[in-house]
Image 1: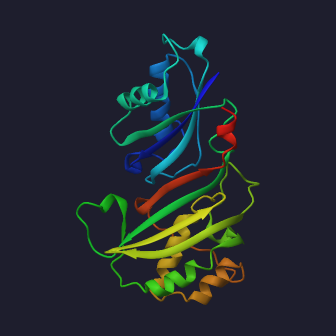
Image 2: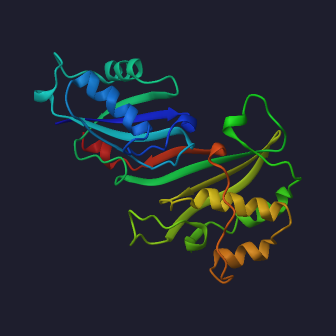
Image 3: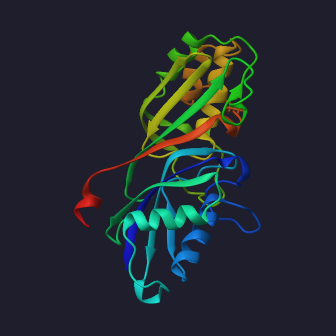
Length: 259
């Protein structure tokens, strides 16, 4: 068995998320078609995170594994050759950035130690970035949003800020968040968060609720109560997928030492 770690970027606008689904176009499905067309056989393909419909990625990670004896190729490709082969077969809005050889035991999701997301809020109408931001027309109190965001770091029960995943009914809603912050860059308000893992709709509901803090419809104290599970209310504000990017996946060095 030969295995590679892939790093890729994609515009999720035209896709029903990363994960393969019946009767839906997905990023994983397009990547699988490209890989199986090149190798001429079935491949094992998995991603580090399941981005939702319309969500983008700056550096999604995936593993690609194939049995060379079954592949219809003359020789096992070098990483750069595989990168070119996949990109030649992928649509323009999906791009493999890097290919690295790895041990067949490497698993993109199970071996990841942290994931980071970026959300972009635009404070003005934009002609070129419409697909990649949430344009909020109301004036937002960025200082209040930043103060609320600082409360997110640490171990919390994010049941208030998540949607139950029917495929994982027993999934814990406790998440260890390494960092969370709100910053500004010209006309953009940027929310960044790094955590061990994320629940379904967690980032988008956090952003939607932070915007309500920025609108002064919620106070920082209200946000803290929701975060601590003391408000009794669910976060019903979900930011649109257009502004959300899977920014990076972190791994320790163990998978490299197994090569």
